[in-house]
Amino acid sequence: MTSEPTRTDATEAGDGGPVSQTLARVSRLHRLCGGKLLRPTGLCSGQEFLMMALWREGSVRQSELTKMLDLDPSTVTLMLRRLEQGGHVVRTRDPQDRRVMLVRASTESYALRPRVAQAWALLEERTLDGLDDEEREAFARILSKIEKNLTSTDDG
Amino acid sequence: MTSEPTRTDATEAGDGGPVSQTLARVSRLHRLCGGKLLRPTGLCSGQEFLMMALWREGSVRQSELTKMLDLDPSTVTLMLRRLEQGGHVVRTRDPQDRRVMLVRASTESYALRPRVAQAWALLEERTLDGLDDEEREAFARILSKIEKNLTSTDDG
DNA sequence: GTGAGTTCGTTGGTCGCCCAATGAAATCGC
DNA sequence: GCGATTTCATTGGGCGACCAACGAACTCAC
Image (cartoon, rainbow over all chains, first blue to last red; front, side):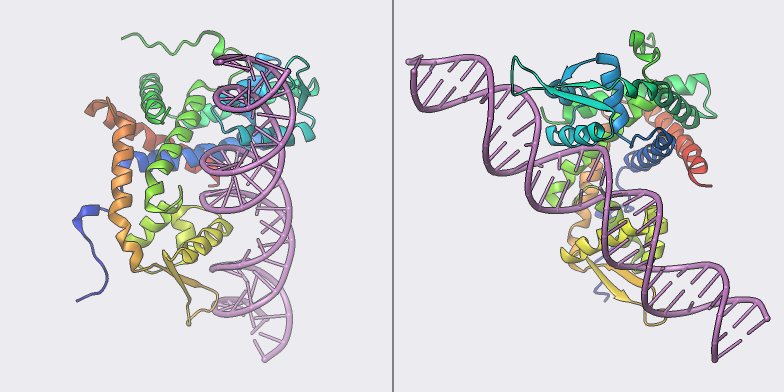
């Protein structure tokens, strides 16, 4: 009678994979929480990965950075533009190969490094609060497995 | 069976919480993979949550939707505009309270429901591939704990 | 009632992230 | 040498998501 199309049991309960669903929610919360902890440092959520890579690696080609972060080139271009404008990053053309941009963290940016590390430590703490060592280990192990699953799946 | 999360100096000073780091990477991969699986349905990553909520709940106030999805009101406004433009959603003003917008899934959108469910099932499968029941259970349980951690931390 | 406060949704701005297409520079093939 | 290919970065467009600020509508106090 009802023109309402359904309740087909094909959809079963409406929730697709329950774990995926939860993972998606946790991801958002985690990202949000990280962003809030990071805000005082002046960085936005996502930029910290880039900065951490630069702090660790020194001077790198932009293409290398893109590969390391596994991001779209255009994403990196825009992020770097903003970070450069904010004085956190320095970009120079490679004289040897004028296509490539050499990127490095600005000297002043290193002042942020410990603060970012602390923010992440706090995030880690909040995330894993109340979990015993066994759970933490299991979680880390399973997460790594899942990462491999999704990486290999993620078309080459 | 040795735990081998020892990426050597990775956990030294530059990187914050190793688990958070991995979680962030997995989140991105998971989202990306979900987006690709979802693309054939015509929905973008993130919209499926909204649609699944509407399919499940029927007609709801936009504010309710915002609360259910735990999103910013402006985010929902914009998402709904696009979804409405795409014919997946119908919005009407509540005559009783002219502030509120009543939102429901369009009749045609129900055709997408099983496809979305299937995409999520596939995502679930890929995500948890190679994990035994015990690991899956543990992962789900820990994820729920973490969700609580981050939720209480978030704004409560 | 009239006014204070609250709820609801929208706008404007910013960022991360993607894809597609383009242009600049180096490299390979001949 | 010179064209075809590949590499690298940028631009333009789109969506998700946030925050801050705003105006419209309803509620409550007086």
